[in-house]
Length: 119
Image (cartoon, rainbow, N blue to C red; front, top):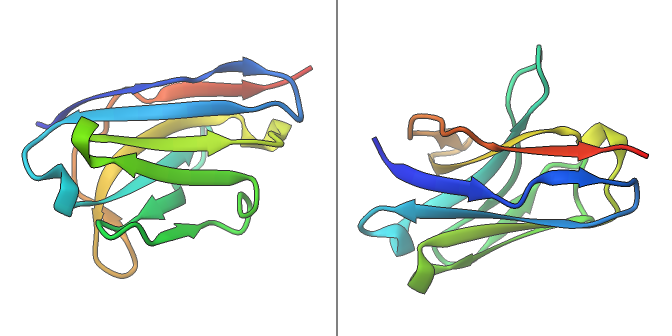
């Protein structure tokens, strides 16, 4: 099981910003495509953003223009910068390695980090 630490979540007011981090203890991180998923209780996990090993990014329509995914291969870390947050962004956020088209997660799920957008 791949060890990783997802962090950066919290409570933020609508319109606010957060930056999530996912640090993975894995060899070969730089060749991996990575994704940030989110899940609201009772719903399926949604792929919010992804980044290839070459830095090509893709976003769900619901977050496009507001979220930015990036990576630092020297730190084995992928980030999700979230701005203009909305109450509907409230969810547990998870990172995972992804493969294929459509992208599929291949690691076991970690604990995630809770993001709550509320006034």
